[in-house]
Amino acid sequence: MLNGDGNESKCVSDEGLSPKWLNDYAETASHLNLDESGFHPVHGTTLFVAKTLVPTLYGDFTAHIFQDMIHKGYLIALIYGDVYADGELYTRMHSSCITSETLGGCDCDCVQQLEEAMRTIAARGRGILFYLLQEGRGVGYCGKARDRMLVQASQDTLSTFDAYRLLGLRKDYRSYLNIADITKILRIDADWVLLTNNPDKVEGMRRNGLRVVRSEPLEFEPGPFNQFYLKSKMESGHTLTQTDRHPLAEITLPEEVKPFKPHRLEGVERFIYMASYLLPIQALNNEVIVSYEAARSLTGERELEDLMAGNHAPLAGYESLRGNRLSIELRPSGMEELQRLDSEDPLLQLRYIPYWFRVHVYFDIASGDDFVILTYGNPASYETPIVRVQSESILNRFPVQFDANKVKYQHAVQRIVRYGAGAIVLVHQDGRGAGFGAFALDRMLMEEGKSRTTEASYKRMGVPFDQRDYTRVFEILKSHLPNRNIQMIMNSPNSMVQKSEYAQALNESGLNVVNWIFLESEL
Image (cartoon, rainbow, N blue to C red):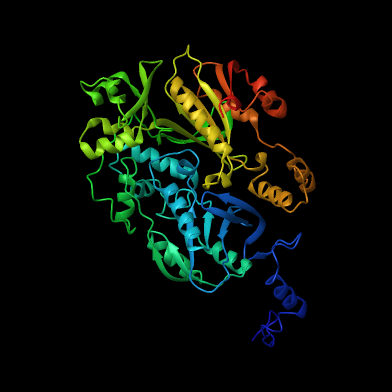
């Protein structure tokens, strides 16, 4: 073999290239105990960040949080039971879905699959759910939102895969290499049973050296708002059997969706306005909001009072709202009885009437973050919409035992829908803007007894307590308001005192709060 000078050099063996200290390091790294203080093992490009307990409706899981050191995305291995015992290990590779898991959208089946996978793993006694921040098959929320915008503008003549092609996107950008890294860090060597309808995921695990002995489906009866989407997935190769049992539902959007080219937001030009589309949010607490005309078309000659009479009545109550609308409370048992007696009764359609919000998605070229605003209704210039700035945590996307954030979000949604106009700004930056890693490390430090408060944890980490950019939040919000007068939803009167940066940004924004709504009085 010639060296750079044209002279022969001897081949060096692999053993010769590995000095003893490197072999010792590799041996030590492969046996690191994640409980050992201060150690953060890494394999490939995957770094262990923290672990924390996640009590769920199906039992206590432990979330092991990792981060890819190249693309910076987080990954969670949500572990239940003894994953080192002999025998098959149930797992799911689940891609994040903000719209269903956080916002309550019912135009896909993602949250159903997430919760059923966790229930199945708990029922089996052990397993791992890998939660991957790969929104929209890996293209991110901006790409996913542009897909939804095109599909809705076409009135469902385009499938999600057609829209991806038109946008110059491949069918799927997801990678599962980090999962192989995680199994090396956790020292798990198992025969996997994969909970999925997607054969590509089976191949993805096998390509990365993981032994998948079989897959089991996670399928649900499609609803009117996700049926077309599921049919598209079935036609692309997913093993779905229920999508063709009923004809496709005819969905009429409450307003037109028009595609547009991404453009800078005037006055806040670091934000690129990427997409706008309509999201059907599942009605909350059996409360449906309809116009008087829509209610009459469904009740026919029957009076609402008559439909509330008796133990098996389909309706539990109603209330008149501003804007010639009705709030109708459904009685689930009565609706089931009506379905049994007359499955063609038009009143049954009330079960499928969602809250239609418009989603506006921006891309922040300064931070690389997505920025999401939900708006409801089309308020006139003289109206005072209700506004909520809603924080979100990745861990709250799981079916945790008590989710205060989700409860507050749902109360805000109902407040806005009942009033008829409003907006929700989603601040999905964990750790008060410091990131999910800081949030997870804070939890681990407190669970280990090394820190008593988040303030103390952040001091140990050298992280400012609140890094969220409230000024930009209110600047973008103003572009979706008819005037500067708003009604503001806050957690409590103390919130403004505790969040001095928030209060200062609101004061400087020029927005005029004419009414404060405090959630603590409703929870």
